[in-house]
Length: 294
Image 1: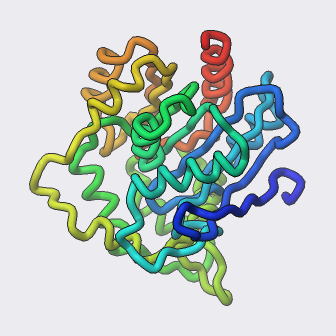
Image 2: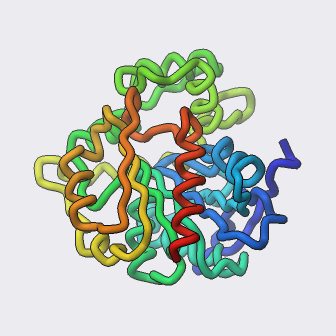
């Protein structure tokens, strides 16, 4: 395992110790890939995809998979007010600066996609290619409500088998296409062992960031920020059973963005597992084609 990636620790603009995984560091002559996970997720979500992109794809690339502050191996923040998309976007830029990466292909799942929209405002030149995994400039209240409800009532399994059953109970209806191995990889990424007990691998205070969300009103949108990305080749992936990204929003994204390609994944919800089916090849081919066009 250790040979597959290395850990990179760096300082955030406000001095917090943050972490990312580096894959394929010897792949210096191709556009690197930056992976950004969801709200409570971490760099491990992209492990299988990162292995494919760095070791198996036709064009092999360096891959950087980030742990945001309060997730994975990054330090927790004493102030919950700093768990925001804007702060996290600046953390990512700090990491890229310390790695010497000036431009990359970005893959963003859920919150990671929102961060990409902010990066387009802060430093648009860094975005050469974008993959948005089940996220767009408009999100559905039902999807956010489902995430909020799950996090507030998150189970505390005693072992990995119980963790798999808990995830299936919460999300199985939306993910009929997943195999037992898929679920096992999922729970291995979500939980960490703490003195013999499985605990979610994120700061519990993150749940507080959703506590004040008024789900009786329409959610804010990022259409102007999305429109500003109109010249960046973009692949938008949607789970056919997604509650967060509607098919109507996906179609509107395609109408507005002349360099956008869409893919809908049957049997998966929010958010599709990027290592399943032919998604690794689809993503690799899209980045390669976009690199030729740029």
